[in-house]
Length: 251
Length: 309
Ligand SMILES: Nc1ncnc2c1ncn2[C@@H]1O[C@H](COP(=O)(O)OP(=O)(O)O)[C@@H](O)[C@H]1O
Ligand SMILES: [Mg+2]
Image 1 (cartoon, rainbow over the protein chains, first blue to last red):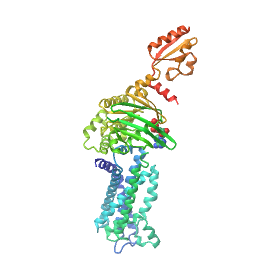
Image 2: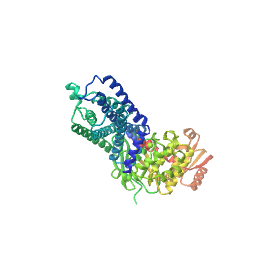
Image 3: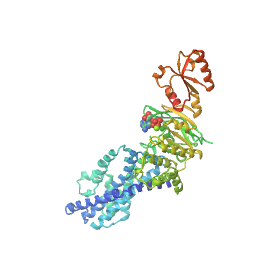
Image 4: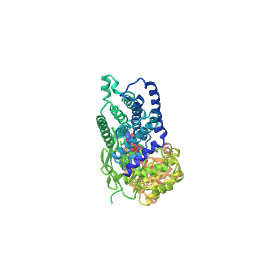
């Protein structure tokens, strides 16, 4: 257990030492989105019955930030260690692939949650949102961050260069999070785009997390949580298989 | 008592390249063992397999009887590896680096030993300095300290003195010799053959993934022509001495130019034989212009072995 906890602690300290970039910066970004979009769209976009646009926006922004940062944490830590070669420090000790997985995904989840807490803390006084079902929100936050932490682990193992990881982030993670109904309700889309949106696993994370805040959602939260759980399970199985085989880590 | 390291039929391919081609090697506990070979011989590959950083295509490797794959947890606890590349984590200080490394091996409350290792490696003054701010030599010491945090009985150093200044090299070897005296098995690869000669009790030479020589350092040197007589003579070498003549090797002959100027290299088993050489020269009517008895060193043995097929 000491090995796993030490690796987790190392991963936490790694982002905590640069918390200004890893937590404060994404919180500020989310706040800017809120100010700009709320100002531009408050009166124009209809979301759920009786829900103000800003109240709709806050949980979506918080979840989007959480997901992006959970992914960024595990993927950038791994790619940096691979590129600089200090990955050997964690490959030489008697750590199992499960411990490795738990530490990286655990740290990514905690980074995501810290960013999410920051976004909610900074925006809710401005907007005045409450949390209708905190447990639902917590469940989606946890499952979503863990899934993206595992996804970051896979991407970090796969990528050989920092550029490749940046491409993955810009062409996969960003579009999928942006088009997951952060800024609009899927219900307002044409039927075809609604169907497409339902193929995006990030949509269920955001919709479910928002249900915890507003008590209203596009999809039944039970269904959403099941989808997110399956997504997490698949990514975890993939990440564990890669770690176990030593793919791109042990030659 | 199991061997510190036991390697059987180890092979490793990278594409068409055979980085290791059926290596057998046993290193007993308490040895100070040298692994020599030119660049690309497979030294680092062998160490990587021992450390679990690379997977063999065939054969087995054990550390104190523990298989590096099947019993990787036990094997890795018994092994401390100083990697060849000068790597570090720029996020942390020296002390943090060592505490983390200790924790990865499952050790808690190991601070007393960590402080001691830092002290022995002259790192105490830099304990709270960020890794980024250290010089190359200091970073190398931290790598060595990292390999020692879990007190491994078997320590492998992959070219630890490459690019390290003379003074630090000296200090490092004293430290490593003390570890050896305390019972640690030491395996080292180095490019500095004088170092290997001075430190290692036994040596294996690798070439293109194969062990081409394996012996006690002293025997290895003795086996390759006990002594040489270097001569410059006037007249023809008597036929009786022709068999002793060796092709010019290493530093013994200054290349073809000297050879043309009548410099000969003759092999003798011991100093007593020098007399019979002299007698034969006199009998053959040769005048000796210059004469010197030279001892081969590891460098020359190395050159000779590597020249063979
Ligand atoms: N990861 C790798 N991929 C491809 N070839 C490799 C890899 N590692 C080592 N090699 C090759 O294997 C051979 C042995 O390398 P190495 O063990 O580093 O030699 P040494 O440490 O004796 O200099 C070299 O030809 C090297 O280029
Ligand atoms: Mg090497």
